[in-house]
Length: 385
Ligand code: FAD
Ligand code: UDP
Image 1 (spheres, helix red, strand yellow):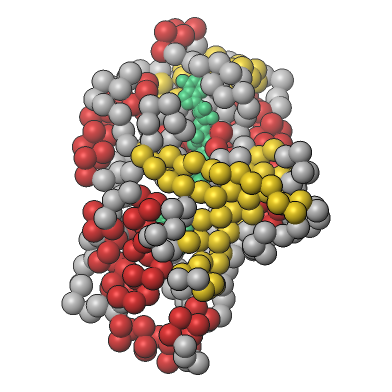
Image 2 (tube, protein in one colour):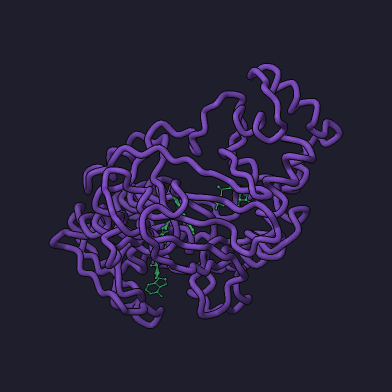
């Protein structure tokens, strides 16, 4: 039986679930407060002709074959292998931590085995169960590498002492004893030839989907639909009744230059006395294109205010307690499902976002088939860190 759905948010979460429901024969209306689709993955060509990742650099990488197949149904993915450089005290290194970086940093000429033994000798073996980011860093690579590459960058990025951050934030970066400087380990990586916006527009291009941009959806409209999928902030749904969940926001200082500004897509600045965290040079995300001009973003991180775009959920102890209260309220709601990075207050890469949206659509399909209520969540927002 066909039902009517409102989807709040036209990012990857909202678009994917909208498409799945529309393909099942339901009527779907999508709302977004922004004037464009694709949420934070929005890309657009600047007057220079460069494809700009407007809300910060986005590289698609995944180990999920079905997600890789899914995204390629809606746009051409060009081969792209992401690398990051880091500047520390005026010298440039190849991230992530790998054999070349270790030899460059310590002025050595280690083989892989020697480098591994050396880093092991530096690692703080007294830390058996790392709890904080700092523990993890010292346990992982020892004091010198930690201070140079992680302490300053992380304080700028998160605005707190790394002792207060969970170990898991660092656990997602690799450490290698080969010269492989690929930033991600995933087998599938790419950048859409025509940008992420075109992909999301194609996902939403279905006769049973209507999209309203520059339109805020509010709870008073819920009764117009059989079910609502909410990919906006979970605290906003409840009018912030337990306070605002903490996010970091980003400011981008956009500059246009001639030629090539830094010769690579992303340069991290790890020293605490450099105010920005990194510089992104957008045209290097499309090495198959050529442009005379170049567009750069100097990226600054700060606490998210009421009128800022929320980027990274902070998820320290205080926020997790607040989140628990919202999740309990959400579980008691009927006819609404919370999804995506804002709806579940978790950092999600695009591939995980798509994977979870596909899984949620499946779960909704099953619930409707069984005649049971559609759950408020298809993941546990309190799980992980
Ligand atoms: P969003 O994209 O945030 O979409 C939610 C939408 O809901 C927004 O457009 C918002 O306007 C709308 N909305 C909210 N409330 C309402 C309302 N009441 N009414 C109507 N609309 C509403 N992932 C990667 O895989 N690779 C990367 O390299 C990568 N880089 C990143 C870099 C940065 C700086 C950041 C912050 C994230 C990065 N990500 C990356 C993660 C990626 O941005 C997310 O996975 C993705 O945006 C999640 O999609 P979403 O639909 O859940 O959320
Ligand atoms: N990080 C760091 N120095 C770097 C790069 C990363 O200290 O040069 C830390 C930082 O705290 C960051 C985390 O490692 O949040 C994870 O890195 P990633 O590149 O995944 O950054 P994110 O996606 O969080 O921007």
